[in-house]
Amino acid sequence: MKQYIPIIISSLLSAVFAVAIYRYVEKPKEIIIKETIPARYTNFKDDPLVELPTRTFLSSSPTDFTTAAGAVTPAVVNIKAIQGSSYDFFSSSAFGTSTGSGVIITADGYIVTNNHVIEEGDQIEVTLNDKRDFEAKIVGTDPSTDLALLKIVDKTEDLPFVPFGNSDSLRVGEWVLAVGNPFNLESTVTAGIVSAKGRSIDILEGQDRIESFIQTDAAVNPGNSGGALVNTNGELVGINTAIITRTGRYEGYSFAVPANLVKKVIKDLRDFGTVQRGILGVFIDEINSELANDLDLEAVEGVYITRVTPGSGADDAGLQKGDVIVGINGIKTKTLPEMQEQLGRFRPGNSIQIEFIRDGKKRTAKNVLLKSKSNSSNIITAKDESILKNLGFELRNLNQEEQNRLGVRGVKVISIYRSSKIAHTNMDPGFIITRLDNQKITSVDALIKELESAKGKVMLEGIYENYPGEYYYAFPMD
Image (cartoon, rainbow, N blue to C red; front, side, top):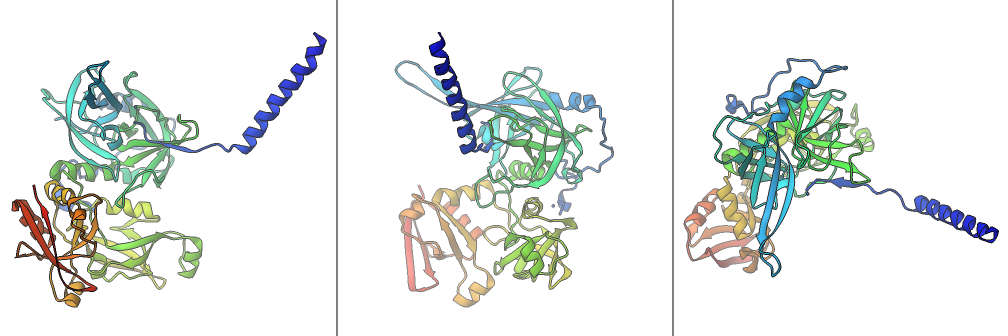
């Protein structure tokens, strides 16, 4: 027996030594999880999805959460997204599903949740806190904010819902509740405080993404994506979206989309089927300490303009490269995410006020007109957007400077999708469309109108700025 003791001790020491080396060399990994298995609209004052309530309560510690929890939990639902079916030799059908939570926001059954909860779903099932089941349809989705709007089908009575609060009035250190409805647990309620606002954690994709999350330490675990973040008055101040963790489980960092941004997005989805993005027309960057010193700024905050798009609302208002935007409609924009959140609340055609610093002096640009991607102040519907997307290109109107320089009016192609109908014509970005089937085209709206009624093969005629002559591209509409 004694002869084995040195071997056992040696083995134990080797194991401990190996584990120590591994922990020293292998650094802990950070995982970001999205669970899958501001002008006000003065022309919409009467719409409850837009009007911002005034704070009428105080949040302090210690706080009794029972009233808020009791009011909210009946309106937080479980969502199951069934991802189609398939047939194989051994089984007649095989379904994929993803689950998450959602929040009923109106008595007639509108529900807001995360886009990543339902994005693969062909059939949506909703289970209320009282275990009633409903079928729901997708009204619209917005991947750039990770939000989706659902509507319960065949509702027979008024449903419980959560009223919106004002996320702008939410303060760091304030108590909040995270309410979810994961698949097998019914409603869950956790409490925490607001850790920070205007957080960007780089999880969303796309050029138009808006990341200005509310960070809290309220526990959010798998199945709670799309659930409610509420204040102690029981008002919706955010939609829980993601956590940051090294283990795959909650570790103290959860993030929610602010309610004021949620309201704008879901109103657009309800009214138009797509989100209306108000574009200022500037390229921007964060302010760092070095840049703040160079510009003689009093604080390291604001958003630096690196370029202004000709013909944009910013250009028309006189904003210039080197200006530092510090506020929109009186609301401070200390960081790039905060500015994106404020702009994300407006549509093309809305006018806003920009506070900025130039040459060390604070200035104001009033009535800055926001435009769409197509450089227009008109609203684009889901049908219009679908036509261009199905053909495979993005367009914008020529600005006045381009019209004067080129001597034409038309529509400029700014990007082309791979393997699309337009891509197969060998058209290049930068092509300026002046005619469709011999019909003059002066704007994106005019082109969409012609495409809506076009049948069979159509011909686009136009020019390239740096190449002589006219070019022609034909493709089928069917």
